[in-house]
Length: 137
Image (cartoon, rainbow, N blue to C red; front, side, top):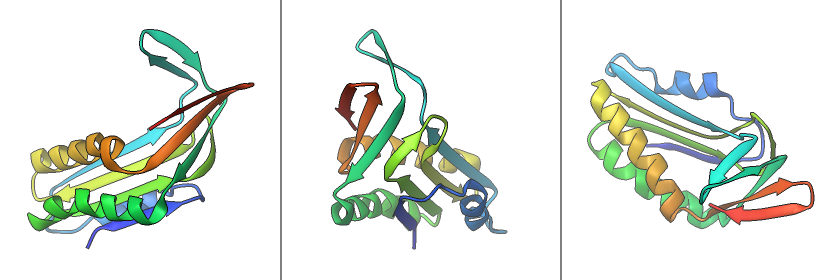
């Protein structure tokens, strides 16, 4: 079963990577999204001091499980961890890991999860730059 967590504590990348390792898997793809200082949106460059993530937690877990299910059904292992609360620049915000017998399936699974996460999972971010706040997914 997939490891899926929403947490306010820092993401221990090494710990979650170790949970993906197994002798039957030859490919592990790990995506780690961090908080960056500059964001380009609609052609405009915007500054960020920090981000606050919030979620409808019960629904977010269910939606993350839906994203992991088809990847696990083919025999792969999935880890999805997303931070909530206030994150500073360079903090890890999300970790997605897929372990598969072959690299191509691991890449595809990880790519699919991160792309669909932003579309379907009720997690929102508030980007803060001084007195300016911007909401998004």
